[in-house]
Amino acid sequence: MESQHQTGHGSGRFRESIGRSSGRHSRPRIPSTSGYMVAASATAGALFFLLWWMLQGEENPWVPAGLAASVVMLVAVAAREAVVRRAWTRYMLEHDGGSAPRSSRLSRSSGRSSGISASTSTWRKLQRQAAEVDASDALPQAHREIYELCSEYLASSEETLRASDLPAENRLAVRATQDRARALQRHHLLIWARDSARSLTREAQQRMRLHEKIEVANRALECIDSALQIYPDEVELNQSADAVREFITSSRVAHWVELAERAAFKGHYRRAIDCYRDALFYLTRDDTHHLHEGTADRISREIELLRARVETDSAPAINHRARKK
Image (cartoon, rainbow, N blue to C red):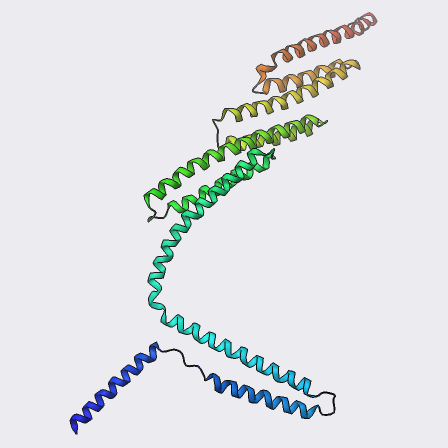
């Protein structure tokens, strides 16, 4: 009897442990579907007959009663679906935890491959856009946008290279693409600076007032200077900058020479001399003043002629005052 009692007691513990183990891995307990639907049907039927009795005085009372009962059934079915779905979701979350490390490793591996494929796709798209801009008569701003896209690609590719587990062949491929992106970046920035400077210089030439000419020309010079900050040894950029500065100097000199000629025509020789001196000032302060040596010589001769006229005009007045004395 004692052995049977111990055996029964042991088998009871064994069944209890099996029950606990199976309970941990069993599906979540959900109320019986048949019982639930019977209760819902009974509720809908009770509501149907209640509304039918209350609406006896109306025409066709079974229509609103039937609609109300149908609504109750639909709500009951939808609620049942929501409960079942939520229970299954909880069950899957609780029993799929063991596969998390493997899925994490798979996600990291797929992350590396997706990073390389995304970088390759971005580079191909960038090449297509750059080719379309080169092939068309695009505005300078389009080339500037390609330059900025190249900058974004280079930044994102640097993040890809920071991954320590990136294969060597992929790393070499990314670096080779970066070199091509830098060359493309330089090409479009130079085109943007050149075309922007030309467009703004043409606009400045059409302005009538000197301060408007200088303002627009300085905007062209700013475009070139921003590119020179990145490529300071670029010969084309330096030549464009010299051309814009020469235009600014020529505009100022032409303005003051015109004022001097007007003053001389009106007989205001001293005023004309001052205007010519202002023109010489802008010529000598410019870095390209050696290009304007002929203009400077002509202005110097005009100044000498005007001084001679001033002396000639002042001589009779001096003699007249001397005779009075």
